[in-house]
Image 1 (cartoon, each protein chain N blue to C red):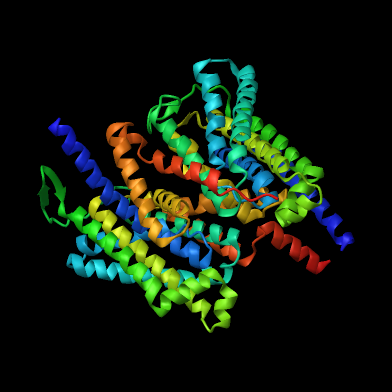
Image 2: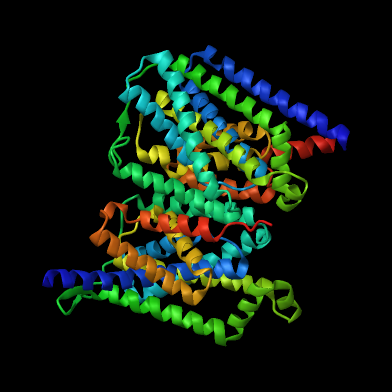
Length: 285
Length: 315
C-alpha cells in the first residue's frame, strides 16, 4: 500500500510541475490571441528556438547557464520583435493571413533548427542534484522550472493589472479604437505584446529543455498544447495556469494509472477537440 | 467588367487543358526521373484541387486534410496487402474503398467540426490528423510505430503514371464542376460573407458539409494512389504534417479558388523542391517556407491571381 501512496503523491507532484509549465506555455499564446486577435503558430517554434539557443550557448560556447539563459531570452525577444515589425504588422487584421504567415514561420524555424542541429533530441542537464520529499525523489531542475513558471505567471498578472503597459494592453484587447482615442499607441502595444509573447515562449523553452528532451520539430506539438490551454481558459491569463494544471494532471495521472504512455499526447488533442466542438461553435440565428 | 471576366475563365480552362495534355504526353520521352517528377506533380495537383474545393472556395482554412490522405492510403493497404487482390480489380476496389472511408469519416466529423470557423477550425482539423496519427502509430492497423509497410508491385511505371493521370482528370473535372455550379456559387458567397449568404437563402451548413465530403473523397483518392507509386509507407509519410501542409502551400503558391492554381502551384513547388533539395538538404524547407510567406504577403491570391491581374492590365 505504501508504494501506491508514494506513486500517487509523486504523480501529483509531477502533474503540478508539468501543469505549471503548460500554464506558462498557454499564457504566451493567450496573450497574442487576447491582445492582437492572432493565433501565433510561431509560438511553439520560438520556444524550441529559445531552448536550442540555451543549449548551444552552454554546450558550444561554454557560457555560464545563467548568462546563457538571459542571452537566449534577449535574442528570442529581439527575433520576436523583428518578426512582428517585418511580417505580422502589415497583416495583423486578416485572420487567415496571420495563420498562413505564422505557419510559414513554423516551417522556417523548425527546419532551420533541423538542418543545424539534426533531428537528435537534446537536453540541458543543470546538475542541480535532487531532493527527497517524503520518499519521493524529485530533481531540483524540475522544482526550479516550477518556481520559474509560477513566478512569471504571477508577475505577468501583476504587470497586466497594475502597470501602464498592462492597462494599455488590456484596453487595446477590449476595444482598439477606443484605446486609440484615449491616446494609446496601439501599434507600439502590438509590437510590445508580440515581444512579450516571444519572451514567454523562450522562458518556457528554457524550463522545457532543462526538464525534457527536445527535438527541432517539437514546436507543432507545443502549439497544439498551448492552444488547448488557451481554449480551456478562454484567453484569461489567470485561468491559463488552472487550465495548464488541469492538462498536466490529467496527462500524468492518466498515463500513470489508466492508459499506456504512448498515448500521452492524445489527451491534449481529445480535450481540444471536445472543448472546441462543444464550446466554440459559431452562433447561429 | 463582364466582358473581362468570361475570357479569363475560358483562359483558365484552356491553360489547364494544355497542362493536362502536356502531362499526358510526357511518358513518350521514357525518362524515368522525369516520369517520377511528373507523377508527384500530378499527385500534388490532386491534393491541391481537393483542398481547393473546400478551403479555396469557402476560405475556411483546413490544416488537416492529411487525415484523409492517410485513410485513403490505408484503403489500398487493406485491398492489396490484406485481401491480396489482382491488379485491375484491386485498383477499382481500393479507390472505391478509399472514397467510402473518407466520405464516411468526413461526413461524421463534419457535424462537430463545421460549426467552427477560422483558426478554431484550422487547429481542430490539425488536432484531428494528429489524433489519427497517434492511433495509427500505436496500433497494428498499418504497421506498428514508424515501421514501414510494403505492398508488392502491381503495375509498371507507365501504367502507374496513367492511373494517377486518370484520377487527376477526374478530380480536376470534379473541381471544375463544383466551382461552376450552384454549389460553387453558394460556397463563394459563404467565403465572401456567411451571414449575407445565409440571409439570401443559402443553406450554409449543408453546402459546406457537401464541399467538405467531396474534398475529403478527392484527398482519399490521392492517398489511395500513394502506395501504388511508392510501394511502401509508414505512419509519418501518410499522416505526417507534410501531407496536410503540401496542398495548403501549393494553393498559396498557385492561387486559391481557381482551377489553374493547384497546377501552377505544383509546377513551382516541384521545380523549387527538386532544385533546392538537391543543393540544400533540410534547408530547402526553410527556403520553401520563406517563399510561402513572401508570396502570401506580395499577392494573397497566388500566381493565378498575379496572372489574372497582368492580363487585365494588358487587355
